[in-house]
Length: 91
Image (cartoon, rainbow, N blue to C red; front, side, top):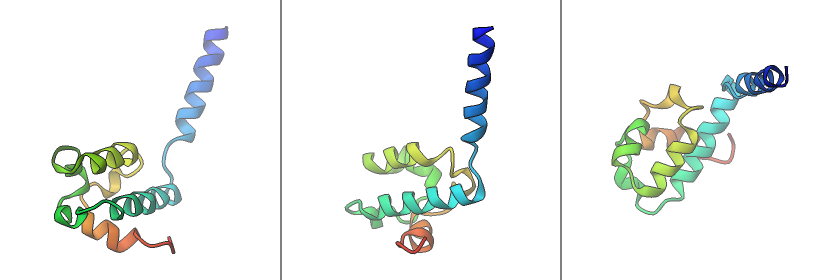
């Protein structure tokens, strides 16, 4: 019985973690702001976000690893496009 309750709690938390549209935009804004702060990120501007894991600088790899589950809809967007669209404080 305790295992069933624990399983139900884990399942409920997993459902709560599913990104909503609003949450995706918050993650996009956070990711853009984090990337914008990296030195020389402009050198990687043409990379698609999904490529950061393999081709980006170490700090960008960490940022993408943190955000990728919530941002799979943005994975084909380039770094430059993400920063241009979401990299301001207004989002």
